[in-house]
Image 1 (tube, rainbow, N blue to C red):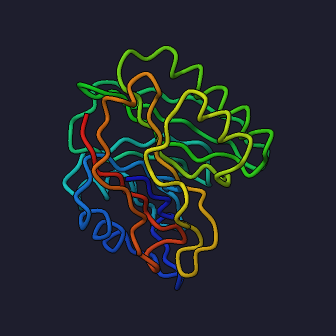
Image 2 (cartoon, rainbow, N blue to C red):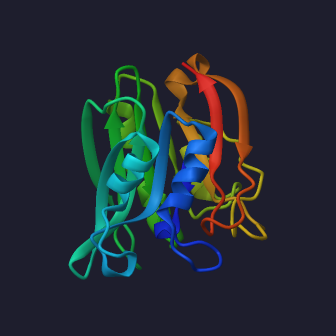
Image 3 (cartoon, rainbow, N blue to C red):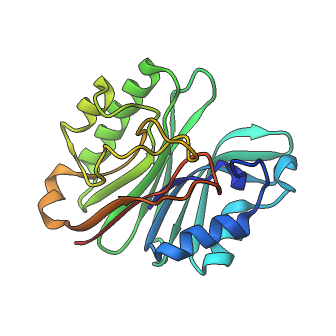
Amino acid sequence: MTYNIRVGKGMELAQSLVRTAAVISGEKPDIVMMQEVDSAVARSGGVDQAMELGKLTGMYAVFAPSIKLGSGKYGVAMLSAEKPQSIKMIPLPGREEARMLLIVEFRSFFAATTHFSLTEEDRMESVKILLREADRLKKPFIVGGDFNALPASAELELLKSEFTLLSDGKTYTFPANFPDRCIDYIFISNRFAKRFNVISSSVIPEALASDHRPVMVLGNL
C-alpha cells in the first residue's frame, strides 16, 4: 500500500491516527509506504506518528525526516509486517521543501517510499536518483509514493524506462472526496518485474481519512 496520510488529518480537518490505522488495517498490507508524516510536531500533538501507527497496526515502523518543523520533523515513513534488515535515507530535490527517499531492505526485496516535489524539474532529478539507486540493488525493488505527477508526465515516462507500474495508474487518487487525478503509484524494478505476480490492484474508496486515497496492490514474489 502507498498512502499519503496528511499527518492523520481528514477532509473535514479532524486529526485521527486511530482512523488512519483503521484504514490501513482494514486492507491487511504487508508494506505501507506513507507520506506526510509528523514526528514530535506541535500541530499533531507532538506524537511520533510512524511509531504510533506501528503500535496501532501491529507493524514495524521506520521514519525518514525531510524537513524540520519547530521542535519536530516531517517526512515519509514505512510500516511493515516483516522486521527491516537495513535502512537508507536519500535526500531528494525540492525547491518548495526538501524531499526524501526512504529505502528499507527486507529478506527477499527492497521497498521505498517517497514524496516528490511540486516542481517538474525537481521531480525529474528525483527520478534520476531513484534510477541510480535501483541499479545498485540486487533484490526486487518496490517503490510507492505520492509522485505529484500525472500518468503521462515526462518524469513518469523516464521512471518507466527502468520500472514497471504495478498499480493501475489510471484510477484517480486525489483529492480523496472528489478525486480528479492520479498522482499516487506503486512500481517495481524491471529486472524483477516478471517475478511479481499481480493478483489485484485498486484505489481504496476512502474519502475522509486523508486528502489522498490509498493505493493497494496484492501480489506475490
